[in-house]
Length: 100
Image (cartoon, rainbow, N blue to C red):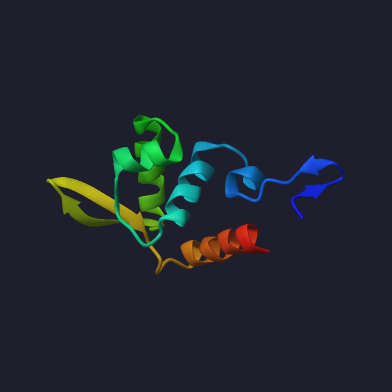
């Protein structure tokens, strides 16, 4: 498994969908979908800059894909909105990519 036609297959979200900041952020949030994160942690975990993370986070909040969680040391935390139909579909797709 893992190779097709002599090429290694990368069974990760970014391996299949590309290395865009949006995909990197989705991958990070899907991996840690049961946790809340500060924007700095999302940026670091996704491997993107904080300004890019902030812009992506704003877009995802507008679509209700990400919601505010609690606060830690006075800083806002964010989490994947698992009630969103789109987020649920992404969770299923992510699971299928990794495990099928």
